Image (cartoon, rainbow, N blue to C red; front, top):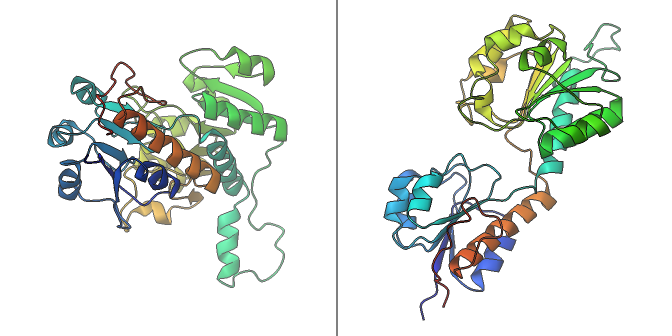
Length: 331
């Protein structure tokens, strides 16, 4: 019997291909960049399963081309790149990799906060360039963390993990803005739920950690940055379109906030001539929040197990549309 075919859109930890190859024919896209649209469509045309990343647009057109497609597994927590309604209407199961990157993302977020507050990258680059001549009493002055106030917009799993690190590590006061109260955080971390505007005006550090939806897109605009303290630091390691990039650059150039740290941008990546690369007091990392060996291995394994379940006609262990159970394709 012909074995089902699975296309993996990027080179990912080998555990995924190893799991899948025991029961399916697996093709892994070898390029350093994602496959272009026409290539992706041609690969999906004869695939029973698709293991994708956030870089792939999984829309109605692609789903119609993939006439054999039974399951799509996104190696990511977010699924903004997938038309869930279109997939559900076609009986295609969609999976993701939830919960796995909480700790690594929290660590990276705190690392960005520290790097900006203590001007780590700026001073490192100056030292590399031979500009370090002597100990400077007024050189690279940054910000203390101890006892400061951090405002977190979106206090879910990752936001709470960040709050724990900052509260227990630096005795920070926790403010949060959220659609729903978080009584556990209020009890354990003395967190205080406030309005978005209150959070902006009262916080020394502002962290974007909410999901991306029409109500949160570009919520951090020029108006928001102007409400923040001039000594404030802005961090976004969630989704690029939570902040309006040109407004953040303008705020930094005008000295309206102290600095910013980004692990996500809009667009991503920015073009080579984007002013974000030359903006003062901004630390930029290339979407590496989940980039630890342990986390990426777990993500790859979870994504592969979604595919195997879908090909077997079983409910996905990490399902986005659990009402859809694809018909069996494994022989």
